Image (cartoon, rainbow over all chains, first blue to last red):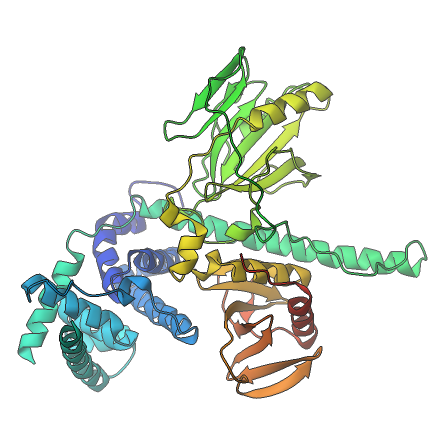
Length: 169
Length: 377
């Protein structure tokens, strides 16, 4: 592949990499390094199949799915090794911090990062990307019912974890 | 529930607002792909070389030309597990008379005799060629080696390139940091080997770590180069000054931050793989190292051994209980649990499939893990 300006895959990367990086960041629990890894893995996979996916005009859907799968794969590695990223395992806002909006959001994002990756992916696709349940189900390769139950559990988990963190402060 | 939905939506939007990916994502993709291909090609070449060497050795033994060696050899390079030498001090004073300092503006520099040429960097992004120094002209050009400069190498001249192993994000590479030994007090040219990947000719090669960064220097001499030129090249090489990475980017800090491939345990696994004559395919993110035996690729990593025995069904292999848990194998060695699991290596050429190693390759890995000492830093 040449560095031709009109290459549709390169155009896609130029136009959408910022958005996809933000998606990766949420899927990675706000860990910048992991988000970069996820984005690179997903885009490399897409690049190897670029002719087919550009021809079928489904580049973004392909990359989104690759990102979600990569984030779940990564979590499996970490779980096997009983590891947690320091970025997400660190202390929350300082105890003296008022229960401000910023602190509350921070707790929620930390809670989101602590969810199992499939639940996290459902919440990110459903509420950050505002995708309908049917589309989320297609990306994750599961039923709409599963998306609904995962979203419900994910939201409950987020609320509960955020409350627990706040109570501990 | 609607409240938490709205709150979460807002929190996510705020959390990623303004977050930007690395500067040139396409360059990351291309060089990542290129590295995979180069590594796979090297792995294939190594596999062929091992097979040919084994065949040649068998033929020689059968013909009675040589006796079998008592122990196997390994191509594993020296590593940072060796005791670190004292810190290298490079003079910050001006270059000697008749020499010129070539600085990169970011704190790195090298001195070379006046009349030598510096420049002509190849296109490769990662690893990045930092300096190309030659006694003759050093034109730019070359995809991953200074091939244009190499073509212009005078018969009595020398050419060397200093390459830094960086990730495509511009940080220290996540793979193999521990195969780079600490910089020696006096850098030599290293052994002559090859033909080297990208260069296509035999070069001297020396690897070293300096300031938390990882370098290799490759040097070529023309066929009529005088011996005195070797000394001059070494002298120039030893003026190389490397600005250290910030402490938080250095391996110890990264290891503590959960990036296992920066840990001494990863260095030990690289050694084990080398000693077992298993092909090393790089790593799987920052969490495991990929190995290849036959056409089966797998990941290897370690965890601390907590109290108790491993679960699963266990079998004695080379005197060690190797336990199978699902599709994973694990055994205890040197106070660590060494894990092995099938892992895809999608970029390998020819294609390989994820799988557990054969019984003989597993035995070699178990034996190598027993024999290669683990010495935490």
